[in-house]
Length: 175
Image (cartoon, rainbow, N blue to C red; front, side):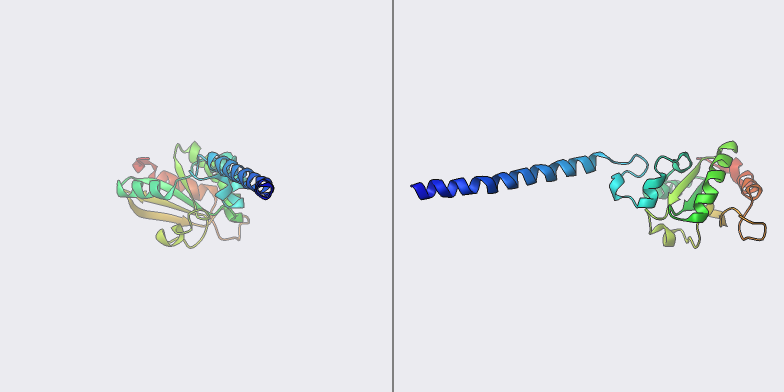
């Protein structure tokens, strides 16, 4: 009988360890699932580090998820989508100037993050970031590939080029 009591006493710390471990795992899972990011609809921890850096940046608050972009296309809406990569230096130079311009022009410019939605590269035939696309009635009508010129001899566009692009199509935009 003493041997049984001794074995039970040895099991108590082992059982206690597994109970504490299970509780800790449960708490971690609860905390991680409870921090869903409103823009992306997934836990912040699951986002790429470059995306996490931009979460509170006011210039990256018009994120469109793949299912929402597909819905706009399927519903034959007319709209602008700005395809960017959260770690793209040209995007990071262009976006802070382009977003205020879109607001000034009273345009909702949906932002599609190709680092989080990698299949968008092929699905939307994106070769370079940033790329601004105009969809008319759910069909791509025009695009601008590249960001702002950093130097007059550089490839890219001026803010006036982007403004002209917006003005050319904004009367047709439905969303």
